Length: 461
Image (tube, rainbow, N blue to C red; front, top):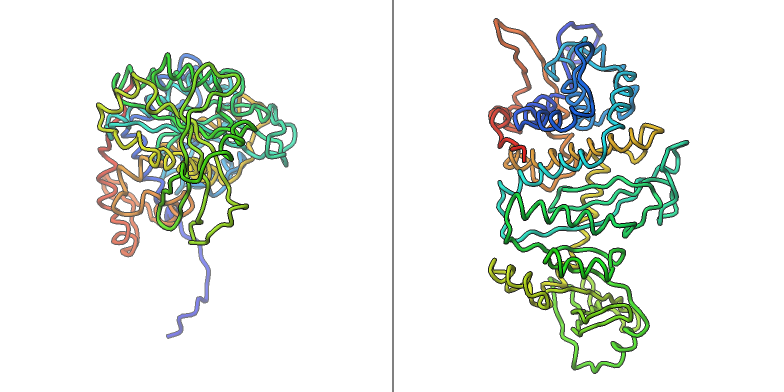
């Protein structure tokens, strides 16, 4: 018998190629994420008896982010006629939002001040701290350019340091998640206004009040955040450690050139090696000496030796070892190794991990262009995207740890855990989602489904 297809027909069965959405949306529901957002935003975003409720909008916008198939507002109109999609979201087709309803929803969200969205991120942060219980907290801070050069008439879309028009939000990261975000116009540089100090102060005070008053906190940043005022505030008020790549000034360069080769020591990581030297540095505007480490790359990661004239170098400024209260907390937590120059250099060089978070969140969004002309609407859109990314990272840890590596990016995650075929049927009083045996066995979908019913719940703080 021939195996060639000879006919095409239509079926009324509910079949979808986005089967994994049901799993991750059930996870969001059972963690109490919707309740957290609704309780936080309801004072601003009023709930009406007619039309879609806030939870329905949240459900569909998170499905929109995790799906990633069509990231345009008009894509919601196409989904309205898809009964299988409605079944995946465990809602009625009549409850699916149109593009106009979504635009009105974000117009309402544009009235929400960013402090309320940040409050949601702070609550998620404390939720994970209490689960993972770190003895030492590493924070990173950086900005990320969202290139909207090709988008017309975007409020706040301004030239950035990358010579592209766009937005430049300020991010505070912990591991692979963003725990605080300030959405900003494109021209807002790293140390714009008081955003840097204020956001770090908010996070540190949150940790001290909701998690632990004694846990050591180490902040890593690049040269855009090298600021005497911020350093003094961290040392004298917040009592935290910082490791910041600083700018090279002429007097510093001259001092390093005058040092004897015997002053330098070599540190290695795998095949890479650096020559480093420590010294106290007091720039002209500084009120005190701070610990500085000059690093000069000798051998690249591939084992290639670099000529002395071409060796790139950088200078690191830190208060580890010279800030009494913060030092005591670090030693009490067993962090003796953090006082070593090699560890400080390692942490500074590991700041590249912040770029991986940027790559991940851009991949989740699938594109950098924002959908709206209003700054407030794009701000609310971005905060919901960041919340979705936070839950994407926790889902990999809470639910699929033995199915897929936690380091995978959204594209790989979608291919393996979202984009598989399902058939949805009703039997007796049950609604059954059926998958092929290959999918059933490959991703252990029965175990994943059970875990989604009882994940660690978010506690509102």
